[in-house]
Length: 112
Length: 113
Image (cartoon, rainbow over all chains, first blue to last red; front, side, top):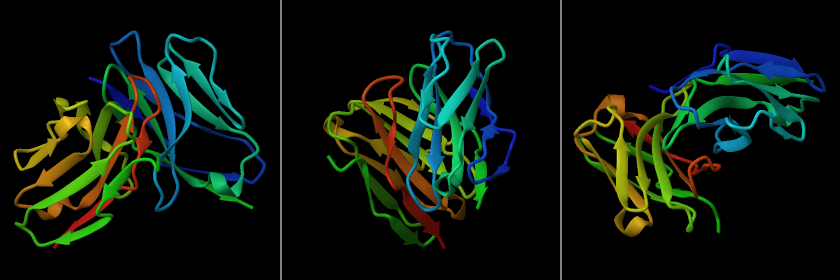
């Protein structure tokens, strides 16, 4: 079965600093996709970044990048130059052929 | 396109009543997902459609839950004989193909009293 584990219920970072959110997953598939989604308070979930498992190069989207370690089944999210607007719940998710499976989330607080 | 829309946004119902939620996905998206999210938790998968075919149902989806997607367009999620444990946010998402970004609606918050 597909599982996604986020071991950090809460993280905090100072504005302009860098923070890394951890995620591990388990899948028996060789072809899959990994995602980080952001859910701001009382707002809908939006995609932060996406990684295709067959690609060795780590995905990057502006201030957001991932460290994808396929053998270790690890998929961490690095947020550089943190901004107050980055404060939200962050969910790691994996997808094989169909459904998205989410982790339990990490609440990120950003302090001025 | 205005994105994924869900209706209603909030629903308060008495225990034992039936409720139905609607999701309108992005028009060209053939994949549609329903999730349930309780406070402080990640979304739990309920069911998934590809076009009008319901391809997978979670074991979380008891016999009281049913979902449809007639003609592969909008979808409905019905909960019969609601229980207090059904209180949660029900999220709908759609995507174009496997591995593509899933776009989420704002959810329907159900409170069973």
